[in-house]
Image 1 (cartoon, rainbow, N blue to C red):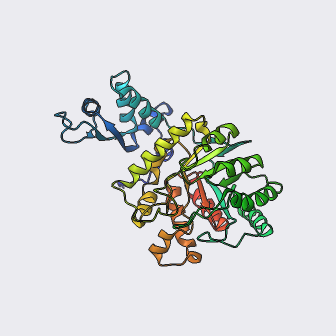
Image 2: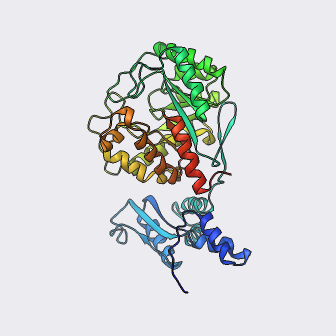
Image 3: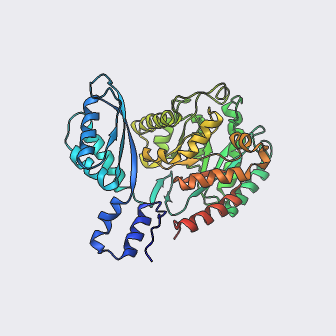
Length: 400
């Protein structure tokens, strides 16, 4: 009996597998797979000539592009463009833009890089090792040695309790331990370098002697980062996006550490005082692009960079939801993506639940991010998150 069924093909791999089942010649697999994946790409800050050339090129291969109405007259000097097409059509457009004037040759290279894709299994370079990405989503376990963090402040101030919790998180499936000594909850005040070092170093040294997973230091202070890296930390998780301490870039370059570059509007003290965005995704994307470019210019190997859109840091409730909904767009930056949404206030606002009752909301956020291609998830509840990820990835077939 003849029938028509809509297929749920979420990746090029799914498309390729389905084409193979049809029984086509192996020589056609790649070409047909490229025709089965449709995308919409946004190209920003184009001059009128570039917009017109790209649009005409798109039309010539059978697809189209959306540009500002005044581009054709030249009145709109700085326009964004939406390019529609299958992978195959985007590839053909990119080939035709090669060697063109303006910035079209650069755009061609970026388009080809996108359609050709990066290796599924990538490596994140750290101070003393490399972490493989792509086989599974990594978990960064949160260890706050603070009296005032929003979720677990005061629970692990004693060194023995903090070390015990770190070992528990490793047993539960954490791939990285993130140690923080200063609260960054909304309205919090900074503490001195000496106080932060007094909190984190004894725990870090003790934990480092007992585990073999990478340790991340959650700080924006170069002195704290330097001392932590000297004692075995391998990642600096900088909520300021390398903005608060100009010496931090030098420490990262010298120590060859991994770094998390996060977006935040303002500082922890004032970040929730009426945050506002015209286009939250574009503005965060532009910030992360500028900050990662800054890091690379400063000598940080691009293979050591992780980006985090900064859920809860200078964001409205709707901004946090939008970041999760559009999380995949940040993959175009070309760096591993980290999500840190665990137990945060937007979950409480959505579900009307206190901090200790936000596990389900945290896991829902985790699920959306997994669908969107997250690489590392930073959480308090390691055991539940590890089980959730393992089940998700078994269904999606990412794990070997």
